[in-house]
Image (cartoon, rainbow, N blue to C red; front, side, top):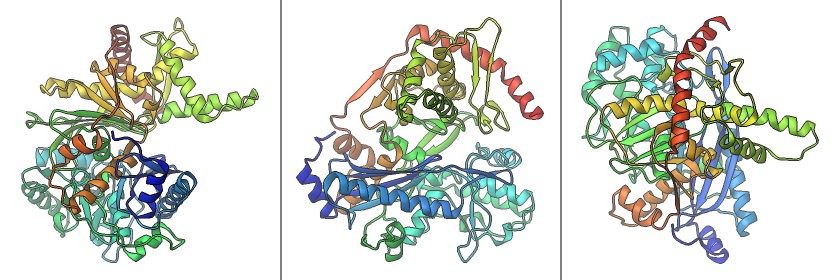
Length: 537
């Protein structure tokens, strides 16, 4: 990457309205990244939030969405003031990203008909199976169309009033600029996209409408979906109302261009420079998923593999696992409380890093311990609900390093199973880029992930910034297109964003690889325990 701006230059960029803002709504945090023309982060903000389990649905309220957006914005503005002595009042461009999929259904007046149903819900198995069979295309339970069709099958009262469907990123974007649009990558998690047209697959839309009509639907699905836009396209400008929503103090000016809103998968691809064909990346957070940009269609339909797109519309094979680092974070919280009880002043980050580093000292196979990190259902492993668990035999070795190693292994287990399906299709990548907060602790998760998928893992110096930085880069791309840039997204990333980027590479260590193989064999055999727990507890 280019050298970072000095203090005077950074102040000028911010005060002149050239800084670019990205905001991403993750599962546990809403994060903001303010970047300069060198794409280095000038300021950041973060708002912690948690989904609620209400009426058997994982959800976030509209009020929580707005409050989180405003607090995160206030944080990044304050951080800019503290670091550089100036608060942005204009922005060069803005991008909004969020967790993909889920169900946000609105009536003709724009009112939310039912509480937001997030990607984490696994209540759409019937709809997903029927649609996958009818469309000859894998429709995962997370996808928006599966939620909509399941509501139709259930005879839910609100369905006839549905006038619009959206994702969380598209919803927030519309609040800011009034445009009912979506980045093509996020749109591909609502309904299949045809790479030839860059929009929803016309033949599949017709097939869906015919099937839905048999269950009483009258509206054509295409009329309910936001327009799909590629990276760099015109997605609207910040309105006066949008500016006031972002910054209730009234200091932020309207008029900034917005890039197409994208999902966290798309921003992960951008943040790891993995949008060109035969590149791949892994994003780890509350969920964990791998993306490989395809150069040829898959031969078969697999329930473990989603086919979505890059932000510029190229097909991507996605292995999405609902459960990532949340269970590890829960253990870190427990040990943090224990440390406090002993009088230690260690903060949460120090506790997390210490526990993570201890995993490298554990036995390669986890010493006979077995961990399941499933807080929610896990379709890749055919688990309808989550039951976190630690199991061990009497002869196992229970100590801190082994406990933490199997917790890390649990994060990567279902991902490994899904990637094996992809490998059987002949899809190969020489290395995978990884990003997410867990990779900020150098050399730990990166090394164990390399062993888990038997593939070299690259981590860049932007790994910790995550999706907020990725959507800021997409907003910067929109800004450059407005300035006359003709380069495609991969070229822009190579030449302007990642030129000179510092990367670290971890090759699979044979001892770790063999240890993970042994662990995974036990993990698969123990899935029967998980299914029993679901019925019993």
